[in-house]
Amino acid sequence: MKKAFAIVALAAAMFVAGNVQAQSTIYATYAPETFVAGSSNTNYQGFSVGFSQNVDLYKGIGVAAGAQFRMNMRSTTQTIWGITGKTNETQTIIDVPILFNYKVDINRDLSIVPFVGPMPSLALTGVTKGADPIFGENSYEWYSDNSNQSRFNLYAVFGADVKFTNFNLFGGYRLGLLDLDKSDNASLKANGFFVGLGFTL
Image (cartoon, rainbow, N blue to C red; front, side, top):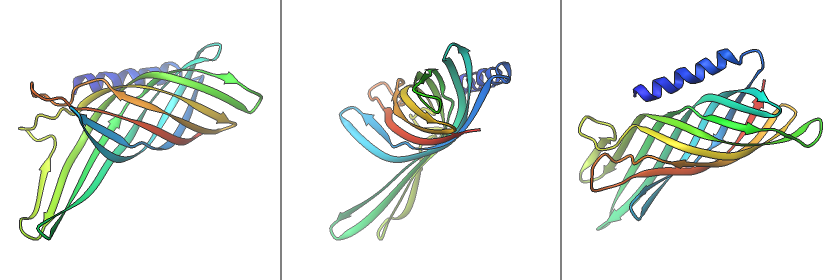
């Protein structure tokens, strides 16, 4: 938790320091997530909204820092002995991407901007809710006091942004670097691609 707050403070300091030359962008993404536990993969649909400020450092090289709210969702049904049960899972997350980038101008209006950098992530909530005719409704909190799942993650992010005047079409991949399962005999990592649309103010 303290690490996440320190990184947010660093991002805020960068905004202030580069405020004169900073460009602000708001965006939305489609960002599915895959949780990898050993040889087992669990896929979630994901979406995010966020903002970033890009500070020009030197001759096309910049650093973009910001924050985004992301949500992962999954719904499954299973039928056993003629009885169908439904499970819904939802996770909400705050990400703080800090992405170094290099702007390549194609012409006056069009440019390509590859980017790479770290993205600290803090899960706010995580819940699994199930319902069936026999056992009724039940729920499980991912981050309860007796849970082995960690809220904090660190991603390596890379991709590219195609900018046309004020519009942004971008995509990339985020690779989870930390084991989210705090127990010694198991591992859990998260990763996924993303595509998004943005507008630079």
